[in-house]
Length: 194
Length: 194
Image (cartoon, rainbow over all chains, first blue to last red):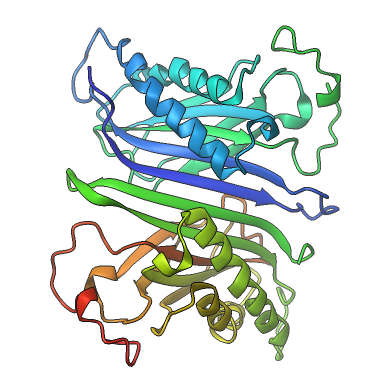
């Protein structure tokens, strides 16, 4: 297989100052990067799709690095992450699953390691379809303050023969987090969960 | 401005392929959006000078953010536009106060140019409503290759007492322009039109 053909990149940075509560000393920053690529398996059933995951790795890494840059350039400031994919109408939801390994690899590589599973979402949709990218702490999935989601989409993608692959990262907890649970300061960081 | 400003979002779009053909120099455009509280939601107020004053601040903040996210010097900006989305309890006139009285001067100062009228649009909508920022050449409004638009949205805004104010800048016109009209190399820059 060949390197994925990219039609478009979209980078979104969302800086939250408050949500009608006390303004935070440091604004909460959330970012996502989306790439619109051709789906090499659109329009027919292909059994052997797994090798495409390797082809997606360089793209994933480039996206992760661009996203960190857009969020200020410091990998150590990134505390949570998520990923997702939207498959154009001539594809299968299974094609979105090809993003699991390269998307996770890319963020762990660019962040210098991360222990928690990367939460993810996937769907098949028309151009303009929005997707909620689930977000959780990068080293301990149970950190409650960092559970979040970022809604993203591109008005002209995915076309039927395209995939939109997405990475998301944030710099910390929800702006007015006060729902208890495991605190980021209490993370052991051994098992990716706590 | 930490009080009225709740959220700041930047969106960068980079197009590498259009109509199946590579775009020689990938075209980039960026929108910067501010979610602000509308102090006049829900009641008729004659004097909108506070919104006009806010327009001055946003006219500096948003273009600065957009140019920075584009990653290019301000002098590289080729087209621009502005728009506002007013929450359900506000008036379109509130958008006009923000966009048309004071925002343009600091916008042009940030760019160090901008003889042309800044194309604009306004509408009222629910949180997450998409709106289109019209785009035109910064020095000559009749440059046909640079007539364009960028669709944007903020998933949680505007709430009924909020306004989303947006500006957009680009480093070029549409990909593969071929419908004639005034070209960039013919611009006289004398009147903002041609």
